[in-house]
Image (cartoon, rainbow, N blue to C red; front, side, top):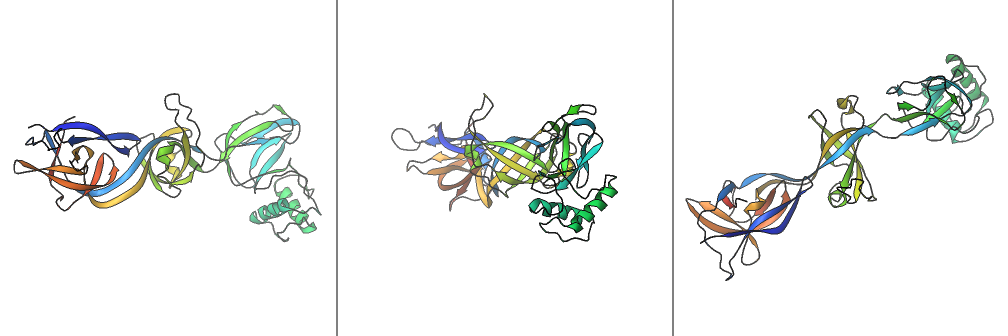
Length: 349
């Protein structure tokens, strides 16, 4: 007698694709048909089984920002594209006067001079102290001692020693920046508010647009494996998971997406890659040392449960199983009559 295989909706998400189990149904009378040996067999294996989703991503730099001119004049110098600018480093120069980078979250929006108070003053003083200038208290007040330290800093940079600072002298950013491109070249005229430089942060990050259904299994801190353009693999970690789904821009896949950010453990392994395609494998739940079989080995039993067709000594028998995790085209099975190394029937599809 022949066993009839059909496709049922047993679904496992593996690498972003859908796997359907080919299951065996009883005949119309409700009595399972005995077919003898199955067309093919697979081995029951004991292994670690992990849910995984594979998605395409793009590696680049986080924190894109534009630095705009604060005075009218001629651009006489800009930092080179691709270079890193750190504390006290020059970003660009207008009429020969360099704008230098300092670290902080407050913008440089006013002149800082004796008597001024605020968090921007504290920011400046923290930078001066980090650069080795002392003799003042780091607080929110721009004192005479602060002005003296500023004069020493100006002298060291070859600038006029005024003891005051305004937006044409420094710009604040949260940390070191990487020069992405220049909006003005040397010799160009510029005016207040016109973009001079576009920068990014120094941290390399991978951006992945993940289907909403797949994003439910990922969370901040989860480990991932990234396949780089040269085929090598690099470990990383999910640094952020978006909370708002946005319609996909690909006309072939317009399904809503969640943005996931991934940080590499060793970003220097990627060299100078920027806006390059990568592949990210997200690993979700893991079951250790469990018995697994190919999804196609599952049988639909008359009692609406599932089983396996065990092949031993040229004969077959059906054993019931309880199902666990579906992943990587396999399914976790549990049952008193199942052990590692057994051969079980599978259809040839």
